[in-house]
Structure formats: structure tokens, C-alpha cells
Length: 316
Ligand SMILES: [Fe+2]
Ligand SMILES: [Fe+2]
Image (cartoon, rainbow, N blue to C red; front, side, top):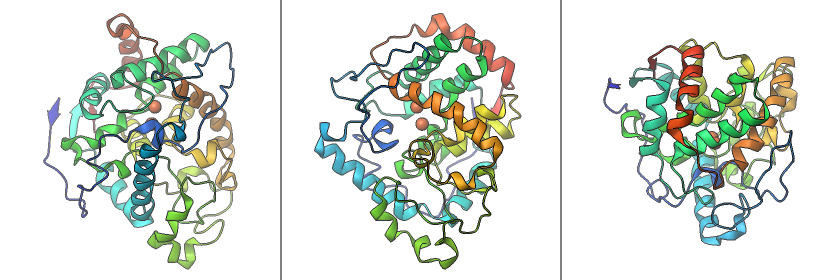
């Protein structure tokens, strides 16, 4: 792995109360709802409780954690503005931070992300492989989907010092569109009142600056690991299909895939791709269980997929 540059100047303070609190983690931050019943799919058996005996995404399990998550979303909702996202896309779209392979990034993610996810006490690479292996079992012929599962969270390397060490609110959590009205279904919607964009008249209507049916590709979505990994995959010339890029880019966009909001901005291709995202999301949630994966055993298969769909070294 080659580290190419020092920390970029992003014009904001990366240290704050919440980013230093290692009790927050992705699963709580990815949606803000408790999953009561697993949805059966193609024989996939979803466990009803996580490693710690709580329901998945159960907010009442620890009310202290809930407060921390709420504070996370307060910061997220205040700081994720249209201009902020534009700046981040420009900065990180340069892909001048690091050069490494997909597998090297999987290993790097193990160091980056803490182990305090309430649903996860295994290294991140095991979550990635658990998701991928669960999908592989039910969709053996969709090898692109296996690889998509493996790489979907790699954008979390944005938390790493060599990527500027972004605060949690700029990397994880549910995502939502900027440039149009904030939908009520966005988790902790009330804090969006403090977002400077809510004072911009152009952003206040249902369509805002967009045309109905313009396609999500033309819509600015709050910045995080989803959009970053999409940029990395696309700019490095991946041959993964459009559904794969859609899954990577919108897997934290819960207002869309859980609540059905913002559908008026989708085009036909989005509608098709959303079907795959809904399938993927079940595995992303439920695969965080005690199923241990023998990394060395499955590694050759995933290396062959990486080789099929990506160049050896990628710019990040
Ligand atoms: Fe994610
Ligand atoms: Fe995930």
C-alpha cells in the first residue's frame, strides 16, 4: 500500500465529542429503527437476536447508546449541507490519498473501525465476508453480488488518518438527499431544522433543484462511506454492473429503501436497481451474527472475483 499524501485540509474540525466516543457504530447509525421480524428470503435464515442477545437495531436495548446516537445525528444533520457534500465529492473524487488493492483495503478496515458495534463483535472483515457468504449461498450465480457485499463498507476507511480521519458524522449513518425538502422519514428529522439548507427557499420544495424522474445519479446525497466507495469503484473502471454500483452507493439511504421516500426522483434504471438493494439490505443487517467465517478458506474465491471486476491496484 502506498500512502501518497498527508491529511487534506477540509475546512472543518475533525475532532468533536461524538467522534471520540468509540461506543457509536454503524448498525445503530444506519437507520434508526428496530427490526422486529426477519423477512424470509430464498431460504435465508435470519437470526432474531444478535451476538449480545438483543434484537437487531434495537434502540431500547441501551438508552445511553440511544442518546449518543441522537447526538451523532444532530451533528450529522447540522453539518451535511449541499455545499459540504459538493466539497467532499470534489476532494475525495481526486482519489489521490492512497494506492491499494481491494483486499488490502479490507484488511485496513479491520484497523480503522472499532469493535463496539452492538450487533458485531467480530473484525469488520468477518462482517463483510458473512454478508457475502450469506448472499452467495442464496444467489450462487450472481457473483457480482458476492463481491458487492464484500466491498460495500470499504468506504469507511474515510475514518482512517491517511484519509483525513473524517468524523463519524461524515462517514457513517443513514443518508438523505440535499437540494430538496427533507422527508419526514429521515431519522431524527427534527435536527434538520438546524441545517443551514433548510433556510434556502430553492431547497424547500418537494423536487427542490431537481426535475421529477431525473434519476438518483443527478441527486446530491449526504456524504459518507456509500458515495465514496461508489466513486472509488467507478473511477477505477470497475466492470461491476450498474445494480452493484447502486447497492454500494445507496445502501445507507434508508428513507428510500425502507420508507419509500424520494421515489419521484428515480428513473427507470433506479427502479430496477432498487430491487437488488432491497435484497442486499436484508443480508447486510442479518449477517452480523455468530457465524464464524474461515477467512483463509474463502479468500481465494473473493480474490478471483476482485481480479475479474477490478484492476490490481486502485486509487483511493
Ligand atoms: Fe454501510
Ligand atoms: Fe454493512
